[in-house]
Amino acid sequence: MTLHSLPLFVRLAGRPVILLGEGEAAEAKRRLLERAGAVIVGEDAAAALAIVAIDDADAALAAVARLKARGLLVNAVDRPEHCDFTTPAIVDRAPVLVAIGTGGVSAGLAAALRQRLEALLPGTLGLLAERLHAARPALRRRYPDGGERRRALGAALAVGAMLDPLGEGVDVDGWLAADQPRPSGRVRLVLTSADPDDLTLRQARLLANADRVVHGADVPAAVLDRARADAIRQPQGAATAVDEGLTVELEMA
Image (tube, rainbow, N blue to C red; front, side, top):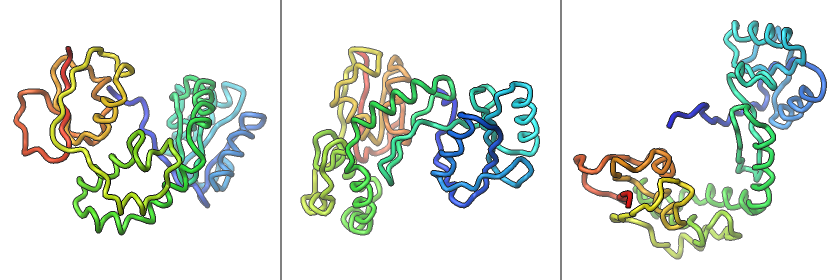
């Protein structure tokens, strides 16, 4: 499945961003840029990004054309077909940021999802991230192999585990001392539905932690997309390297 956009987090602190327009939409973008620490400049200034929040369609499209001709990436407010990038709805649990985008199709839907996630994500999530960062040297010493380290973290952050991100656990040092079990080996999953939303919690967790996914030809791409983006995906019957970590075999019933 092709992504309509590649989500990126851009550090704008101290960097110029062009903002054109007046009114409510322009002011909303101004507040967002200021929150990110950007320096807001006019059209003639040097910058890499620009936001056009002009109500008049002809004036807006003319400005978009001028800016794109200079090689800038442009966001045209309420004109998604002319956008090189869009600004998402944001859930802030600093340093954790969750961005919800719809490619400019429905800002209202993105806002509704943000409100749901605000209620779901605990306030301790940022603290957990900071403690995991502080523990990186100890984590590397404990698990010098990158694959083993990733599997250990995946197990600790799983649903109901010691560092479940939706729980309140932030005792990273205690987790390292406890040496939590890590998933490995081969697991066969037989799917009864082609809808990824019908995956059980166990199936979704195994896919999220898999190093390799071996799948039947009839397993839909939407299900395979629930695996890690960097997990190896290979059809059944293909030559298989020596198994390392967790391999999940997917078949349709």
